[in-house]
Amino acid sequence: MRREPSREIEGARGVAVRASLRRVAVLARHNALLRRRDPAHFVSYLVMPMVLMLIFKGMLGEATQAVTGLLVMFSVLSMADVANASLTERSWHTWERLRSTRAAVPEILIGKALPVFAVLVVQQAALLVYGVLAVGMRPAGPLWPLALAVVVWCFVLLCAGTAVAGVVRSQGELSTLCNIAALSVSALGGALVPFALMPSWAQAVAPISPGYWATIMLQAAVRGDVAGTAGPAAVLAGLGTAAGAFACWRFARGWGRSSAL
Image (cartoon, rainbow, N blue to C red):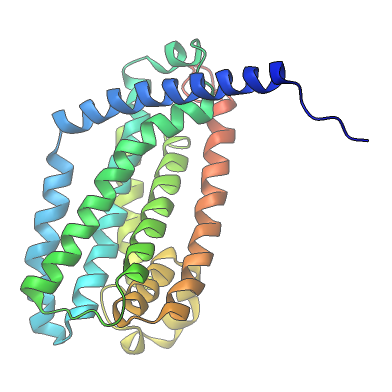
């Protein structure tokens, strides 16, 4: 007969969980302070799409395409800010100091990720509200599919940005990679022009782009299409989980040391 864990073991597990949560909370507060001290990226990636949404609305004559497309494009650009949250540990020579503490790699990454995740959610929520009030987008049906879409897409950006931080070696590499990714993901994903207007070869390769799934997910959420939101959300959640697992593996393997990995 299976024996129940003793109270001592349960107590020890509870202490370990509380200690882990405290370490994550300390790291999150520290990184939130860093975000507040340098809001430049947040402001620029909020103002620029607001201006372009009005222009694209006039060009395309369709508010939902303009709002969701530019939201996807500039949120991919925000990956640079996500990756920079971890990459700065190299330039500050503090990664090894963090690794010498009791905090495990997942705790460090979660502590860094939480403030950035909050920034991404606020950014996208603000753009959607602006799209409704200023651009003329009209969501139909319940709002929870739209909230789900925002959370899933922010999760993907967070995991992908952290994974990128574990690969690049400099701020220059990071900037180049994120700029190329933003244009490629947006263009191939149908974020800049409606999918039906894209060349046939682009339509064929579009599903390899996370921007494709993000765009159709957000547009389905705006229409109130729950099934159309859930399918792409599942695909993106899988991609985000894979990217997050790679990031944990990469950082635990010794990212940030002076020697080659």
